[in-house]
Image (cartoon, rainbow, N blue to C red; front, side, top):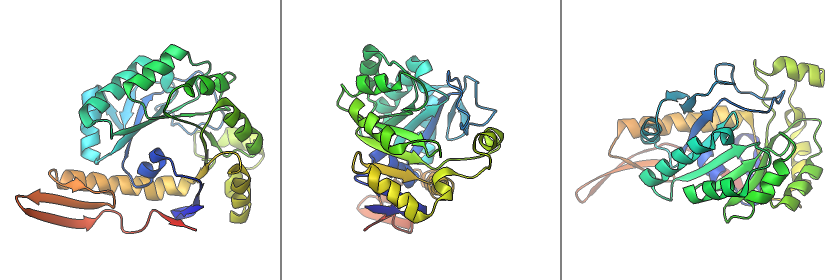
Length: 293
């Protein structure tokens, strides 16, 4: 078991997409605000939801070239594609994946989050051929998402499920269904309540408090211990997203801009080579990302 900083808990191998995100080395590509689902718990802001716009790390972009520039400016080693529902604009998704892989190579890890139902085999194949490394399905978003998982599982990439930790869910039952469909891992996101979903959440749950958030750490660990018997599982907290991931992304971006010829190592150290000399800057990240227990 790995206890990640700020109550992130992981049983089993941490997915590469998560590992890069935790150290701030993933560019978030909000590919569209369009979405056929109307989830009451959706935290997407009103200025993005239902609008067909593209953002890279909160920066409005108008082209693939803009996104490539943001990767460079932020020192990203990978991209996380989200929305809205990315697969309603699948041609755009493939265009961006193809361009990013061409520019930064196969090592540039790309994962995508989707609640798209009844994914066609030919579209899954197009995504795979474009270079997508990992696809995570919001299995509770709509009927037919389980079919999408089954289709995606026919290709040799990483396939998992990612859901918010809502109090009404039976996590064990969901994990079993996911595994039967071919999922290889499960991610639980702390139930994020903000100004966009507050009133819907309050009506749904009587009082506005997070699902696993409101439980004790022992309760969270107990749930995850049961889940890990079915699938490798990771619990990602809101605190981690905003105080660790976001902070690290800002620091990595600063280094990338400050030292344009510098190379950011996996441990967060920035180095710049000049002839036979190597100039080493202060580490971007000054604490371990996780503890192995």
